[in-house]
View 1: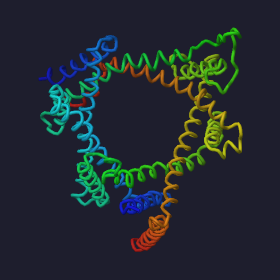
View 2: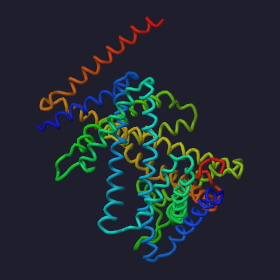
View 3: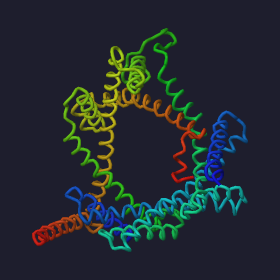
View 4: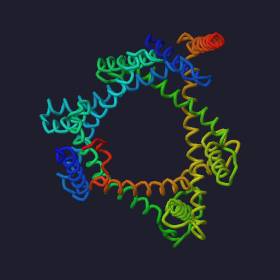
Amino acid sequence: MIFLRRQVPLLITLITGIVFAAQYYVPHPASEQMLTSVTKWLQIIGGFALVLGVSSLFHVHAIKIRRKEAGWGYSFVLYVSMLGTIAVGLWSNGKEAVDGTMTAFGWIYNFMMVPLQGTMFAILAFFIASAAYRSFRARSREAAVLLIAAVIVMMGRVPLGEYLIPLSGDLSQWILNVLNASVRRAILIGVSLGTVALSIKIIFGMERSYLGGGKE
Amino acid sequence: MAFELIIGAWVATGLTFFIFSFLYKDNPLFKLAENLYVGVSVGYTIVKTYDTVIVQLIWKPIVENGEWALLIPVAIGALMLTRYVPKAAWLSRYAFAFIVGVGSGLAIPRTISSFILKQIEDTVRPLMTLVPGEGVTFTWSLLNPASSLNTIIILIGVSSVLFYFFFSVEHTGPGKVVARTGILFLMIAFGAAFGYTVMARMSLLIGRLTDLIEFTDRSYGWPSLWLLGLTILALVVMSRRSSRNKPEEQ
């Protein structure tokens, strides 16, 4: 039984890992077709993963409502809005617009989801500004550099900033395209080396945490 | 104006004010909008996933084109759901093993090619350029990211930041200078990222305010003005009620 529970999953990882790593080096139509198919397969499997996540959310809020815990009314709102959106979405065949006419699902998207999402992220502007005011004190040389770079980029992104500091536009572009790009490149190289190392460890069974805990 | 647009304007304005009310303090209006946001977003994702995965990737190809091989990923995906049956939960490992195995296999050559070799290739570029008629030239323009001067700056930036994260060598002597240069580059990048994020959020804020201004129009029935007043009134009432309840509790 331990073979089925522990060894077979490791074997599946080993075989699929080696096959799809090798696929990159085989420029044959069959190889390309295999890649196309597996990409589609991963999308399908990902859909089932969503079921796992959503059912967990359902469960947590159902318990809150059943036990009438503090704030259970908000859980009820969440439930109703979720089920309502699903019902309307299925009724509209998942389409926001048909022949240029907005569907009920499109109405939910345009007048509920977009404003909620936009405002939720927009209020972060206030919190970021307040956090910056409290923590952006040029206490060291490094902090001063960070502060100056942030101010230049902020100034360079708006017409008023460019009007007040004429050089800020060009300077902002230079910071973003050269200095920022070089750091992003270095971080990307480091992260990529880590990704390759982790992938190799996973394929050869040295990293097994994805199989979950349990005695077997 | 269409009735659904007027109702939409009222709903969008109300929800926007409810979220903005958090700037005053955490309150039931914000919590209501927050939970509504989660519910609608999850519902939207479920519908979109159903349409993309179940209808477009599974049902139509199998029924219309007879692609029965698609039942294999369906079976693998279904194995994930065995998590709900404790005795059969181990079967879900097969699905995770497949996803992780394929993901790792695909990642190795593509990461090496696109994110390591390509990035190094773009970093280590010739410092001089051969211009026909002018011969070998060194370009000083800072505004051109491909200029010779910027090539040197990028090379210094990438090397010093990589060295800063390389802990196998002690950062002393000349190594300390390189590491400190790396920190300097990192600070500039963090500052730039911060500034960029702030401006992106500002752009969203301007978008919301533009909508609110648009909804002050008479054709919508002045929802921005009415709902602003009602939201403030609700906050005042709730604040008074909670301050009245506090002394009673004490």
